[in-house]
Image (cartoon, rainbow, N blue to C red; front, side):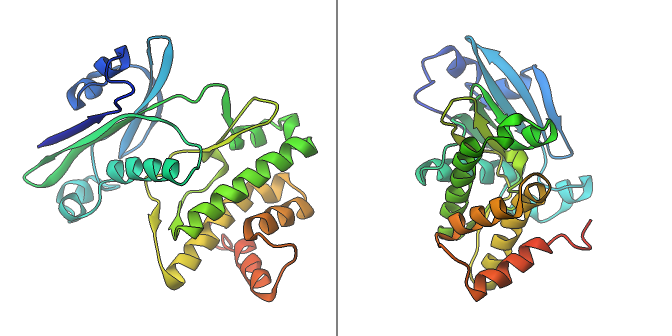
Length: 255
């Protein structure tokens, strides 16, 4: 059984035809952007615009888990989690990529394959690339403040919804080239909602992922300002200090 959805805004366009079915999407060729055991990402040009096609053909990190593990039948497929999360981001007011089409195929109740298509956000670069290339904008106080405040705000929005991204790294944050930059959150196949102590652990993990690069590229005062913006506070309390200690040491002994 195959289910496929096309965004009504694109249904009558050339993109709606090219991405009109799961079979068509899996037959596409394009520029390979990423490839791993679970998925392959292609960049495809249609009608003067570029689109990212992410195709999943498994639901486990190894062949054994993919075809014989219980997750194939009972777990939430990554592709479904990814489109669900992108739709949630938009509903929460978080800038993200526009979904053009998405869907999956099951056989005898088990996941077989799935895909999602997003329109490229023009004139954007991920923050990890800016850090790696020592982009001069990171030294611009006004620009950096605008970006930092937006990242703090969208992160707090996620956590207020009891949602953790689980891979909230600089590479998954895009920023455009405008004088007043906009930050976009992308690529979230493992994000989910949590409660209680598990939610707090995931919150710390999200913040630690952000701080991993920040600790190398930003000053201590800039990192503290980010946390205060995230916490919506003007000063640290005892609970904040305890959380910050966990954030700073989260990856100790893990890598």
